[in-house]
Amino acid sequence: MSLVHCRTCGRGVCRTPTQLSCSACLLSRSAASTGSSRHPWRRHAAEVDVDMSTAGASGISGDSYIVNVADQKCFEENGFVLLKQVVTEQELQTVIDPVYHKFIKGEVHVPGKDLCDMSGAHGRSPAEFTVYNVMLPRIYYPAWQGNVLERRCKAIADQLRGGDMHIDFDQIFAKRASSADSAFLWHQDAAYWPPLESDTAAANCWLALSNVTKENGCLRYVPGSHLEPQLRRHRPVGKTREQSHAICTDVDESAERVVDVPAARGDVILHHERTLHCSYPNLSGEWRHAYILNLRKAACIAEERALGFNHSHNTQLNWDVFNKWS
Image (cartoon, rainbow, N blue to C red; front, side, top):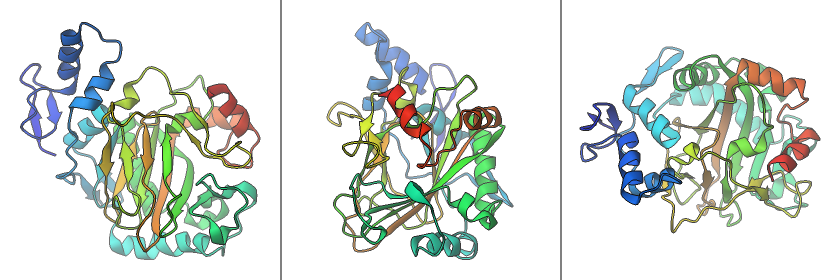
């Protein structure tokens, strides 16, 4: 993404040179033209292109990762950003892949519902899961903690969310090949979590462990949806949350702009806790692999734990929390 300057206010613009105003000025203009600012983010999402094609000026710096101004603006305005090559191929092969595939092969014991099928299907064995989900793998395999991905994701999260960001939880998501029901439905991450008094800023770091395309299940976003003043109403994907932990909400794709975000192996897509997102099913002939680290402020994590909330699917509070949002 090239960094140009808004002709109205002079701010940097995370867009192609054809966009001559920043998002704030576009929003102000669109609200003025309609005589209403009731839902300015919806006009923003529908009208402003998100050009991810030249992402990558940010990059690795030792155990850290530097996010440039253009990518910072992209995150601020859209609620997500694609960061290229956060982990090298050698690091993936030596640090991430060996442990990740221990979980996929069932070589690490994961108790109860922390090993589940997030497709919404009920009664399947792990060998039948189409959205193979492991919750808290770094807890069940402590030797993985402190690795290079964690260090770089903390550096990225500190830059984009104002510092003091720490790992709250992690997840494995693997989509089975040729599985039409492996779509992950529209949702906002914050709808899974309890309302808190402390700063709830989060950075969801989604690491591509496959080359991710529309065919095998890339992420999709509603740009600017993190600016909506309220979370949308969510419901269980299955009949009840006892059957499936996953929840979903409604997005009218005919009225709201939706952006597909393919990613290469080693890329990280980082999104805001309130950004609407989903993913396609995996219709390809191979598994699609991804790993997630979610970081939040230290005080936020401490408040969660004091409530007994640790993101485990085995924790009863998870269901109670959902009832507050639904």
